[in-house]
Amino acid sequence: MNKLPILLKREYWEHRGGFLWTPVWISGVILGLTVLGMIAAEVFRARAHVQIAGMSLDAMRASIGSRDFADAGRAFDAAQFMFVTIPCVALFFVLFFYLLGALYDDRRDRSVLFWKSLPVSDSATVLSKALTAMLVAPAIVLVVATLAYFVFVILVAAWLALHGLNVLPALAASHPLRTLWRLALTIPLDALWALPTVGWLLFWSAWVRSKPFLWAVMVPLLVVFANWWIGVLGAPNFSGTLDLMRMAGRLLLGVMPAGWMGIENGGMRQMIVHAGSSDDGGLLHPARLLASATSLELWLGVVAGLVLVGAAIWARGRRIDTSV
Image (cartoon, rainbow, N blue to C red; front, side):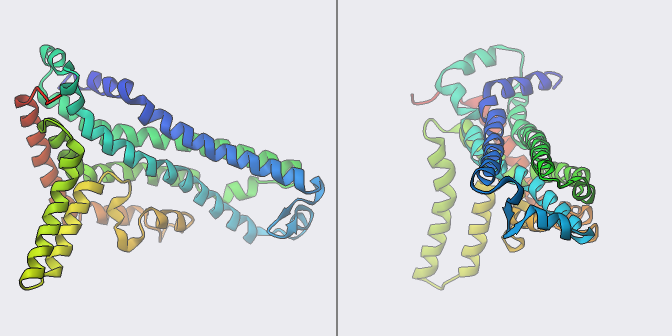
């Protein structure tokens, strides 16, 4: 296990295109669109009369008050969440296919023979891939998105300053450090929630001889369909089907950040809606995070995930070839 840091570095260097450059490019596109919006405002409107929501900046300077600054602060908080949320959608696809290929690709190109010749156990290899997906990749996204948000703030502040608007009171009304801290707290919670999906995908990546995507996706879907079809032929049991669908969703979609919020809470959409909430509210309030971290559903999934990771380690030790 003392080789684990080296294995984590290996995973990063081999997949930094997905882990690092995907959020960098997405954040860059958001910043680029921001700059284009500013340029469009300058080109199509007179510089001293730029219209924002039907009101010129001159009128805004004359009518702005403390409540407006508080609203602007909440808008900055929502923008900080947005900079994290959008790359997280891409992160789901990156992690899903990374885990499916994490152990299969080594067997397909026969590099598994080289890695097995090193004094590195199968447990350390599988755990390094699981920890990379659960902790390293989300942490990279958070860092990149936070840096991009601060660049966004500088751009907006500079643009408004050119028109005589001081953005500092609005920034003082925002909560960037509190927001960053709460987002950081979600990483270990996301990791626990994702563990069943991580174990499930790694198991099929280690075990099947070909097409791990089809095996990982079709097996739970076929189970759900079979249960539904049996219910149609006999006594319908739609509640059982819904439970199986929920379990299948947990197996396949658990690496989606903020998946623990559940559909009923609106998921990441509510993260943005409640970004400016007070300390007594908001889905990311520490008290709510603690309640989610102590839920029975979460820890049942953790137990199942550990079993699946153990199965992936066992399969890694037995399977070294593919059909390719």
